[in-house]
Amino acid sequence: MRIIYLHQYYCTPSMNGGIRSYEFAKRLAKAGHDVIVVTSDTENKFKGWKVEKQEGFEVHWISVSYNNNYGFCMRLYAFFKFLILSSVHICRIKSDKLYATSTPLTIAIPALIYKLFKKKPFIFEVRDVWPEVPVALGVIKNRALIKLSSILERQAYSNAEHIVALSPDMEKSISNEKIKGKISVIPNASDCHLFNLPLSENDSFISKLKVIRRRHKKVVFYTGALGVVNNLESFIKLASFSNGEVAFVVIGKGRQESDLRKFAGKLGITDKVVYFMPNVNKKQLSAVHSIFDMAASTVLPIKALYANSANKVFDAFAAGTPLLINHGGWIKDLIEKTYCGLVINNDPTESDYIALKEFLFNDGKYKNACKASLNLGLNEFNRDNLFKKLNSLFKVGVS
Image (cartoon, rainbow, N blue to C red; front, side):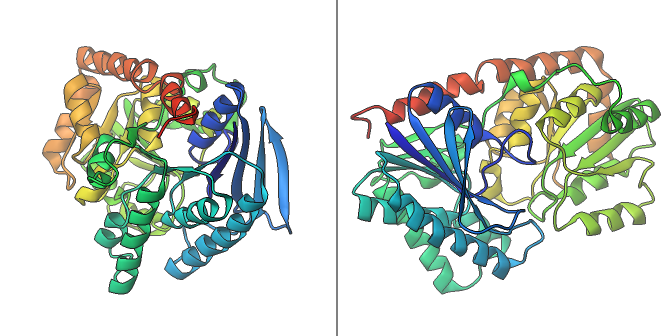
């Protein structure tokens, strides 16, 4: 089968970002499918489409500038530029099926255009609950825009041959009588082969990690976007209760970075308890998990966000690293069921820090959490196991 894999923000392991599409495209190609990824290059400027061969499949890149510091209008421009150019491009490619993955929700428009003009089916992957999340965040306030978003969402779901949701909570959110029976839950996955790798001897990045490690008995870290949604003020507030025994490291970039640095500065904990480091790729991330003790995933106290399936969570499972979260939802239920980590309040108090400290310094509890985390990575969220479920959707007669 010839498959177009449409993902606006596709990444490879050498880039900073999630590699779900890369890993699944690679496996689809290995399974015998002819795969073409259609995506955007957000950093390099060039004209036309750039075609690249990657591990048995093709990637078609178009230049569309984008970064997390963009405001609403600039983001909208990037979404619609890619929407228009990709719509024309995918309709020119001879194919049997389209796999369209959000975000953004506007990715549904090329998928609908593809179905209309090519008379071919598409599968729609839901990575975020739209439009509930942007509405809850106040990103979309205009009533007409909210209504249009809801209409687009319904059209995407009703016209899709099948829908892939990234969490059980997302499935509940999007499920209705019209689409009942055509939703599969395929969460983000753990790539265990990318973690617990040998540490390079003469690597400046690893040296920096080891300097922090030597200064403190335990280290908790966050990796990813530094945006409003990620609520890293909560993480830094938690750090403010530490006397230095436990350090907190923020790794990434985003719109909130400057504000977060100022907040940590006001608390007087910068480079004493809290450390900021730039983005890392997957190879560097393995070192972070090997040297530090606990991974964190934080969000704002908005129920719609609790359905998330953050890559950092599954990276923790892949590495066998215990997980710290500050929210409810299915990941909270998973932690409470398997004891693979710790759940604290969204607005942390000293009691939350004491609970964290007790967790980290209790050898038995900590080692059991490491085992539980790795067990989830090797089994329930193993990439190969989840791929079998995805690949079944591309067999003839599946609907």
